[in-house]
Image 1: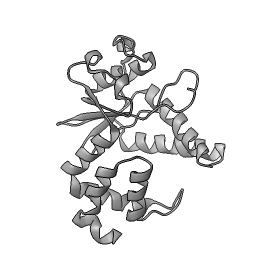
Image 2: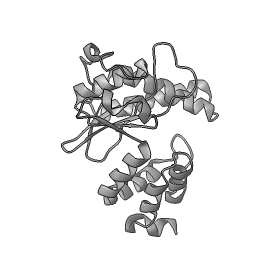
Image 3: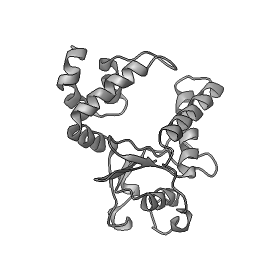
Image 4: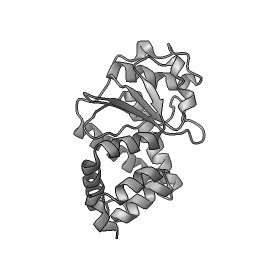
Length: 205
């Protein structure tokens, strides 16, 4: 998934887990306050597959996991109906990346105007192989920088996520969500920043 804003653009590339589905690579997500997300059909296909796989690994029945993953894609597409990137295919395979399956991500990033690839596999996107306007950073660094720059909005987002939770999974508290970000996604610095923010401090005490 790609994200574009006036000031910056981001692409998130989570780490590979297990074998790929034939014709698919790793999941790519993007999130940033004030950014306009963009994605290609190939990225959406990967997202559906890996979201479903993740849910199955956590104990969700396969059919329910697939429906949940597709529901996520539908919500994304409805919320950002101008996000689809097309005509990226001519650039696919032109960057000589260490893993050729990552090529389409850079191609879509170029067409979509992305400036950052957010990934736990930074070595898969060496600066020498990327266009000068694009660089790769770890997800936790991206999250920290985004929250630091938009702390009030980030606190509101945490509260909104908790308020919306419980419909298709467990009900989350602010404390529980921060614990999840810390333990599952290793976003310790981001959690520390949010924990002392005026908008959340009172909710987690």
